[in-house]
Length: 429
Image 1 (cartoon, rainbow, N blue to C red):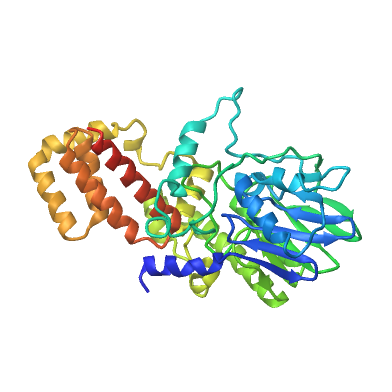
Image 2: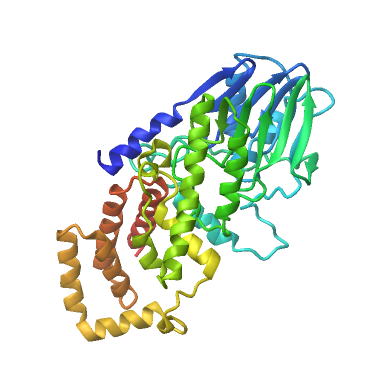
């Protein structure tokens, strides 16, 4: 199956539904990029994560009201990513008379929140996040899905519903009894360091947050992130697997049902991460650069064929590059790169050596041969030295062709959003 067809088929994981997965436990899937889980207790409802926007949260609450009219007793944030905390105010407004308690780990971080008193590259992070998630793209035709969530989702009030936690815990485990049901809030650093999993020991149910979803793990996000510690994530998966859960509810996509299947998924996820670590270190100790490493590290069978390790969101290549950078820093060991010429300086000299006309001829040949990656390199050289509408239009075509070759949703969305940005710039000339 072609990559784009596989990405479209992946939409099956995000069909909108409110499922009762165990007695008095529901999960809302497909209303937004992230799921919301709800547990009934004798004191009211416990909401685990609140999705990304007030509009999405309102839609989920309306669906929930078709199965129960009980008030909200507590909210649990598994971590601070905006898509998990952005709808909290909607659920908090439905709280019991004495008000809702909101639980989180002490180190909760709202990663992209604007902090006016703190120096931070917020502007570029927001711009790259919009590209990764394809915010300006047409739903269904351009933006197929987000890799871990549906393409079509309400974003009114995106992040606007975040409410500060009322209760935080600093340690490894915080045991919480609400209305006759036990919740073990357990530190589970992985995709983020503030992550927790929620374990219901009596029911044998684990809420995995973002440490497992139906895609190769996003060990590096192209919107830009701090280093995500691979070994720490793998260790958390060990801890999660040791619980021997019968049901795993995830922050994105469908639940995993059955002790054997849960153990298999978590074990394979852990093994894939540890394989990246092991093979990358082997290559690094041989002196390989990041470009050489991505050709060296290949996920083996049977991991490569697991449906939940397909590269819809994270990729092996991006993970290898992130691991190298996280362990070795920016320098790849080649002395040429200690004080390199800028890309503009390099392109100027390459064009002087070869001549612009010859590069333009090669660009036309690359497009004809459907060698779109090479075409992008050539347009980089040319556009560093000339403001050519013709070259920009070819670059737009190459970006769109690259997008259609992608199974990975963030890559597709990034290519298409960059093409749209360039198209708008050309139109404004």
